[in-house]
Length: 60
Length: 186
Image (tube, rainbow over all chains, first blue to last red; front, side):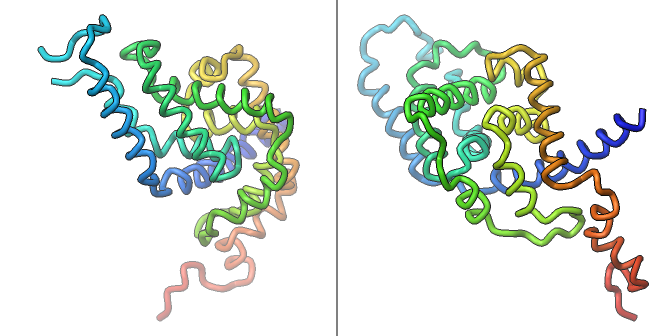
C-alpha cells in the first residue's frame, strides 16, 4: 500500500527527530537538589529505622 | 551487599527529567514533578516489584502526579510552547532534515496523552506493552495515540510534502546546486 509506505517514511523522520530532542533532554545536567534530596531521604531512613518494620535484610 | 532497589533510583534521574519535561514542557514544573516522584518512590518502594522495570514504575508515579495536578489545576501551562522551544539551545542540524525548533514547536502542540505515548515508544524505546502499563491503559490505546501523534506531527511539519522535505536537507541542497557536499577543500 502506498499509504503505509508513506507512513513508515514519516514515522522514520519523526522518530529520528524525537530521539534527538529526547537525547538533548537526557544530556541535561541533573541539578544537585535531587541528589541532596535522595541523601536527605536516606538520612531520614537511617534515623527512623531502629524499629522492626518487617522489611529486614539489613545485613547478610 | 546492598539489595535496596532504591539505590537504583538515581540512575533513572536523567530519563525521569526528560520524561517530565516532555510531559510538562516546562523546566520548573518538570523538576517539581521529579521531586514529588522521588519522595513518593522512596516511601512506596515496597510497591515496586523487584526484577521489573523500575524506569516504567517511576514514570508511572510521575505521570500520575502530573495528571492529578492537572485535574486539580483545571488548565494547562499557558506559555508552554515558548518555554519548551526557547529553553533548549538550538544545535546545528548536521544530518537532520528538520530544524529542531520546528520539530519542538510541532511536538508541543500534541495532547499530553499523545506526547507521552510517543516519547515512551518512539524515544525511550518502551514496547507498546510497557508503555500501556506505564500509562494504565490498553495496548490498543497506546498504539492509536502513537499513530495519531505521528499523523498530527506529519501534518504540522508538512512531511507529506516530499519536495520540501528533501530541499531542507543540506546534502541534497548541495547536490542540487552543484556544490560539493562535505566541504572538503582541495
